[in-house]
Image 1 (tube, rainbow, N blue to C red):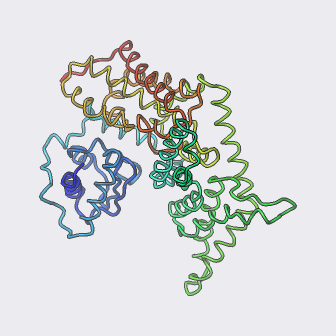
Image 2: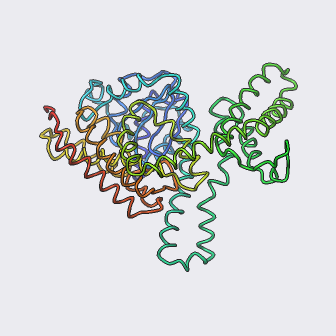
Image 3: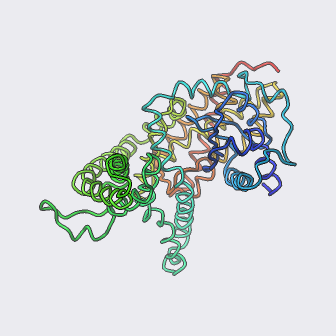
Length: 466
């Protein structure tokens, strides 16, 4: 996407979102531009933003409005929008689009899916699911790091298998160090993000995360047993950073303002650090061991059957909002083993969507639906599945079931060979480069495409009228 396109989308978003004064916060993840608006979110606003050329869809999560743009595009548009927000307050620009009446329609329909998506979001807005969403949001800013290091690791695996002599070269070894960098800093990053997410001071969460991984802990014996640096992984860091936030908030209410600058950070660090070393790190270690063992045992023992179940049920999990619970599990598996064997299995659900949508494309007589699928299939292959889910398969019903069957087929292949991925945040075809068995991953991807395609052809669907 060129610079003019970035500016056009950013100008139009700024105009339709109510201008600089209405946007209280703007940032991005891998595929979405995320906005927090002072004036709230309405169906009319969502429809206007979804109608912008280049926007693949919209999503609302709590008070946050998300514009689905795709990998790379989200970061580029966000950068252009930040420039506009820091400049003059005028909302409109020379690249702004004219809002057409059709853009304001919020009626649910095939190829749109906004009303359907809104109903699903409202049903999933329970306290427990919103809590897991907050936990998942701690890791969203880390995804670019996982992707960069994971892709380097995947490429090194390929090179090392092609010519083992290359592994002794300084360049290969330097890249190997680079590929593990995210894991060396993960405790600090997770601690910082956890404190920020729960309303504490980010740097206090960061240094507590560093404390738990400090190598000199190994030289200290406490209660008759040596301390273990990094025990409990990110689970311990999540626990101690959350506790530190609670302690900090309470101390700010108790300590006079004249002394808070000195005493609040000191006491927060000492109290939370003591609890971390004596209680939370051992507890986190038990939880971390349980999560790692459960995931590896389930796939190692269950094999293809486990993959079939996980791959086939992941899309319904997304509909129920339960997929948020898997993000910290992926991160923990990466920290413990260097790969997550869950992600390749679960990524097959999106591949099933691609196969099912292609079957709909071949069978439907609806020209608008064909156009929607043709524009959404490329991004679906690249791992962005929301346009296909909410705009095609879910509104049609049976193709959604066909997509689940495709995901089950691909998941069975990935689990049977225990394919691991050295990253999170990407899926579809791009994930292949970060896996430890690229041929098998591609075989599973093909199985998911074919499974979703054939299942949808067999199940059929009611072709919508123009």
